Image (cartoon, rainbow, N blue to C red; front, side):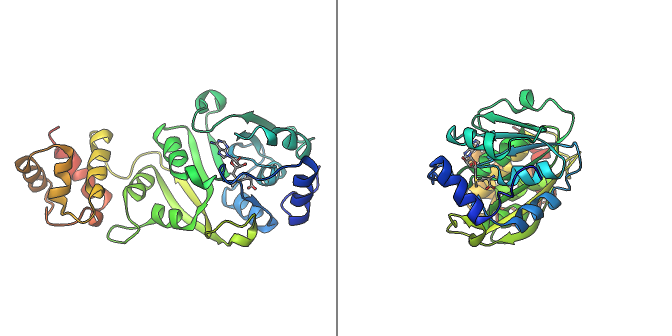
Length: 281
Ligand code: SAM
């Protein structure tokens, strides 16, 4: 340990006071102040020495320090310029660290992470959780896994099974690209300031191949979006929002062997794939 442990209430308070930092609610700044949670995240990510890790939003370096102590090579992307001076101080002496000042939704991640395989580990800013996760997955980056802190409710949606209230387009997309698993729940008291909601650490193991064969991913996700766009409608009606005629929808559902009277949220990935694969558009 080169520096004192940051994941403590008094150390965090001291750092913030020293640098005169007022945390920004707008940027989702809720810093971890619980060492066990940091260790839990590092363990969930199964970080080994010299593995490449992309961290989103290092803040004052709390989780970053845990990753570096485990021997990872960390590239950390932080949007808040004020925190760059803080990080230079709190993580001084760690040689396997590279800090990038930027917006994770705008930087060219492939350029910044040219390595053949890497892990994403982050305590995410909650205001952009879904665009970050979907952006990483849709770009087909060479990720081995993602271990992220998210709102508990979002974690539940990511792992939800068909027919449950949490099942939606996010569940299908995350389960198409990864095998997600909720690792543990984190109470608001583990953060400074405490967020209004409970959080969860979720691990998503990125699949080499999707679990279902689809001839066009574009069509597959168009079906998923349409099916969930009108949750109260039957599948046959919801699919008409794609612009297809009633006859076309009926023919496709018959061919796929799926009852159009069902609700979209009862469909498994296999069933969405079956419809997408006979869709004539
Ligand atoms: N990793 C630290 C921890 O665990 O205590 C801080 C986590 S805090 C929940 C989220 C961090 O993401 C903040 O430092 C915030 O400034 C940063 N952030 C917010 N929006 C961002 C964006 N678009 N790109 C990169 N970082 C962002």
